[in-house]
Image (cartoon, rainbow, N blue to C red; front, side):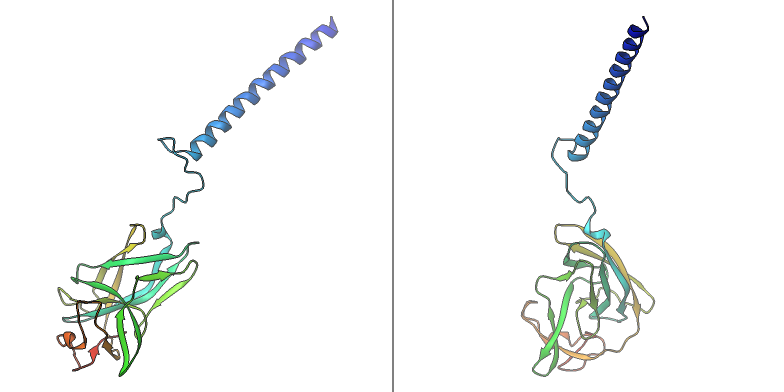
Length: 207
């Protein structure tokens, strides 16, 4: 009798253990299924849900104050993510056309031109926007940009993501660079004579 009782209890314990293990396996299987598929059943395992916009920040962003014409914006774009971030376009309500520019040596000094393909901020690295280097160019201001004004910009990234940032206007007297036309409907240095503080053949521009 004692032997039978012990056998019965052992079997009952084993059945309970098996039931618990089965329930646990079912729960784990359900969790794994839900993490690897979306509502439509599509496999999404291994995808990165974080947008590149969350990895990109602008440190010390500023724009040169200007009464009319055009102006430039600067700062340091910092990428905290594990992948390069490619900026393909920029817009702002204060300008009808915003371009990404680089500054290169020219026949009569430094010349600026639109950067082919836009800006790429390396993974875990920085892209410095500065007078005399890469910069954001407001080609046609719709209103004056005054000292202390906060100017919004919207960056479009490769893949369609958009990032809203802002820069603060400062007084700044920059160098003179010649504008390289061709990528702007045949524009050249002469087309920028209306820029505030124009300097004849050269373009009054900070970078």
